[in-house]
Length: 116
Image 1 (cartoon, rainbow, N blue to C red):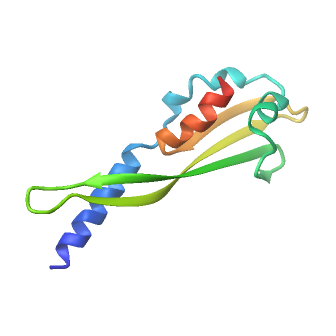
Image 2 (cartoon, rainbow, N blue to C red):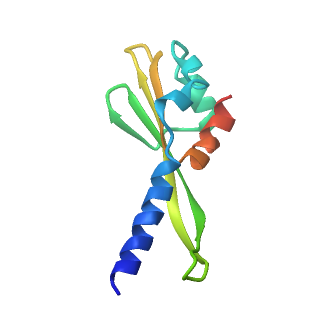
């Protein structure tokens, strides 16, 4: 009966991945391109890390609960940590050339709400 836990794990993974942000959902933050980096740092704070010269990273993690049930099983709840990563790439003068959000869509709303 190892198939059932594997099936449940696969379903949970698909649910998590289906909530990931894509570049088409970043249109609201695209307007930050050409702006000074301080337009982001004033709203979301100091970056969590600098990946390379001119690339700044902020990460936000939330615990989310997934409820799953089926015809033959009782409803189950699983809590997982979901993350969103905000990346800003700058030119030499700290002018933003590219901004991206990657991660769970709902968790990325943390950054969207602060940057809009």
